[in-house]
Length: 163
Image (spheres, one colour):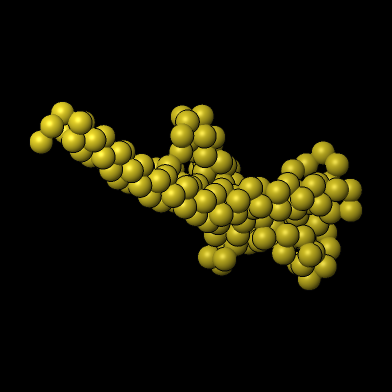
């Protein structure tokens, strides 16, 4: 073999190696892109949708016909059921239940996304939301379903907080 043949052979081997590396890189790139797409559609978009639904529900619950002027949502609900009875406030209870269900779904999605989070800030905000969701409406709803009245549930939460 002469020098020209050896040079051509080296060029061919180098080109083939480059194509093989490029093919593997492309395959990994496509796989990674697909995984990111699944994360976005499976976790991040549903989180955003749940947060938007919660914002709309909170706005409705805080609006004049549903909530008292100087009290929170749950306090307003308690005052209304004491005054008017539970049957007349079914709509407000349904919205509170929907808010609690959304919070549960968002917390589940945040837990699923946590290993993929790119920043500590996202994880920290997710933890804040998880604390809000588990400490607020969700625990109130659990007490309601466990057979206590909303008033008893709020009193037991207030007693727990004082400890």
